[in-house]
Length: 107
Image 1 (tube, rainbow, N blue to C red):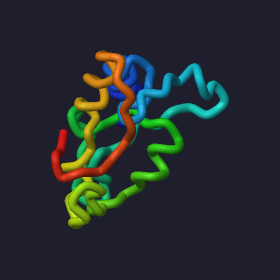
Image 2: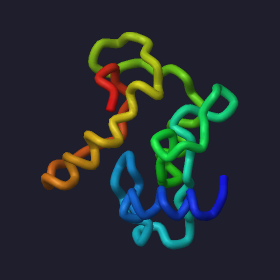
Image 3: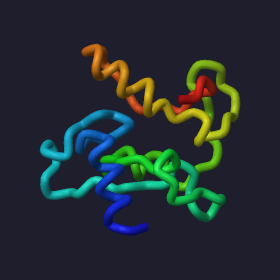
């Protein structure tokens, strides 16, 4: 992925993790990752909608997983369908607490 794409993802994210919303300033020693929502090994692409800025903790938690267990239903769900990036951004903008989660509700 080229530097311009990485810069666009970082700009879109407001230089904050798109999952938990922690700002890059909070962890200046550890750079955030521009990651594939669906890992490349599973067919993910470098399209902007398929990329997310992630802190090291969220990046490590998600990893290349294709599925996860929905904490609400206990069912196995597709991980890429359960990333609530946009919902987390909206909650953050409204001043609500948000946390990174994999759920069947998608995002």
